[in-house]
Length: 215
Image 1 (tube, rainbow, N blue to C red):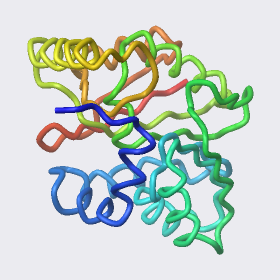
Image 2: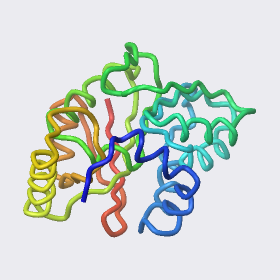
Image 3: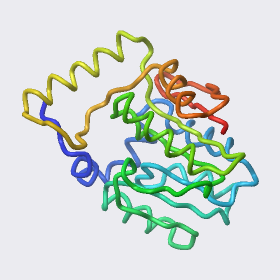
Image 4: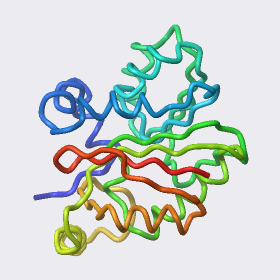
């Protein structure tokens, strides 16, 4: 297989994305609901990392119709679709790499990510989690629903394959689409390293797992 640049991969799949996530990725349909249930009622400002077409926002807006959302994604096509869906909501959309974008300090009540972080290394994730931690207010919450590996052997296999494919294609850097899920234990360790005091696994269906991290 050839690796595709991350933004190009998702831009090509905008029209099929919603159906794929809702009907083909086990756990996602229920995961959107479960994530929305964990958003505190007091949330006024929400950070959505890798927001895509905003599937996770549907259930959230039903609970909190006036919440202010800052959504960040690499794909212009995905953001355009999200904008069409929620043009009557308080949504600020940013086409950017969320590793480089400045979230600010102590701004958000809650941060979320849904099926977006299973493409990155431990080091990259820990740096990102630290940024998320700093962007939350003193009682802030981070909620992640993502594809996670069942065993360390499974995680190691995908990371090794990603390294092999990059080497064969001569890729030295940049964001390319390839799944490298981490184990639940490793996810929790990274979040703890970033500063989160309590991290819990609240739900799992197949490889789709919901974690909640309290500042």
